[in-house]
Amino acid sequence: MSQLDTLVPRAMEGTAGAYKRVGVAFGSRFFLLLLLGLVWIAPAFIDPHFAYAMLAWDILVALAWITDLARLPQPSLLKVKRSWHSPTALSVTSNIEITLTNESGKTIHATILDSVPQQLRSAPPQLEISAAAHSEASNTYTIRPLQRGEAKFADAYLRYQGILRIAERWAKVSLEQRVQVYPDLEQAKKHSVYLVRSRQIELEKRHARIRGIGREFESLREYREGDEYRDICWTAAARRGKLVTRIYQVERSQTIWIVLDSGRLMRARIGELSKLDYAVNAALSLAQVALYAGDRVGLMAYGRGVRQRVPAARGSAHLRQLMEQLANVHEETSEADHLQTASRLLTDQKRRSLVVWITDLAETAMTPEVIEAASQMMPRHLVLFMVIGQPDLGDLAVQEPKGEEHMYQVAAAQEMVHRRELLLARMRERGALALEVSSGSLAPVLVNSYLQVKERNQL
Image 1 (spheres, rainbow, N blue to C red):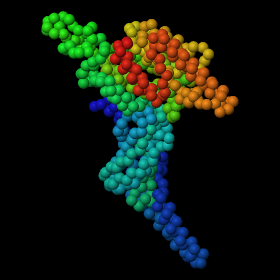
Image 2 (image 1 turned 90 degrees about the horizontal axis):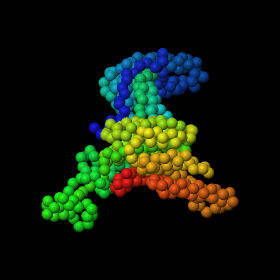
Image 3 (image 1 turned 60 degrees about the horizontal axis):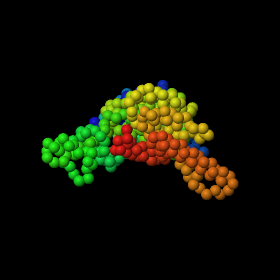
Image 4 (image 1 turned 30 degrees about the vertical axis):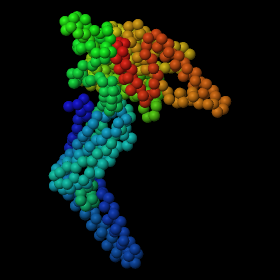
């Protein structure tokens, strides 16, 4: 079973029960038949006896409604099942299947309303399902989550009629369920597979070794033109009587810490997603690649305090834990405490590691606190400092002023862009890998940067 299959919510099934005390209503054809009885109104003005005919017709329709109601199966003979075919992931469209099982001896036509939380779908779906006697039928609806975290489904409601569709019963099915909305799993899988293959890093699951310019010994082979002299194993060459070269592989079991800022600056929305949503998706992509490459990955998400923390480890179970924690990373309205987070990470991680810090910069005259916090990490760790840019700010900075007010706006945008570039340049001078990227390219740039660190043996 694949990792994604284990994230699919379990199916929920329940038996219908009566809705409210009465739980019956008139079908659409009942009112149509009553309208047909109005044909006696015109003759009734001429001869009052036709009014009795109209009354008799109404009584006949009422008897038909009672008869049709008596033929409708009891709610306890109906079952409804909610099934999932894929995990619920942020901004990814997926299908939910509703199955109606009819254990009665009568064919029914049902309308089912499923109570879907608003974070998955703007309006609850109403499905039309017809189920023959002693059989089942299904229909599907789509969801597209716009918020990560836990989503709660409530009961499903039925309105069902018989073949005549004169009478109608109401029923309710208990299908309460809690599901987890994960980051964009498909995007993470796509980035990890593509980037790993493009750099010829084999998945650890296949027990393949990674050759690169790392310094971890892998094997010996005969010397080839172009090999570096420093890689020649002279002892082996003396035994074999010919030159032998050492082959190295990229080091494994190194530690990668992903630090996510969830403060107010990450609440800014780019399209229908926030900056934090893009950061979480990129963090999941990086975690998958790093775990497949054999490294240990830890997670720390913080606001006013550390909200989510996963110690560095590796393995498929650890990836599942990272997914669960990333799903519950949410924005905060207050400024994040960057210095506290840096102090906590320095205490927890003594050995040198790669710290991937995803954040945004406040537009202040002073040096942002997050720069100072990241600078505290540099003497001990290699810091990959990723700042999510604001696309409209960059577009405004390159525009030609079209008036006095617009000129001030362009000048302010240029000053902000220049100041951000200056801050990142200073971090690079001090040894950090500092980049400002757009939200759409955050994931591929982040994973590429990590792979470059591995290939160049910078950690």
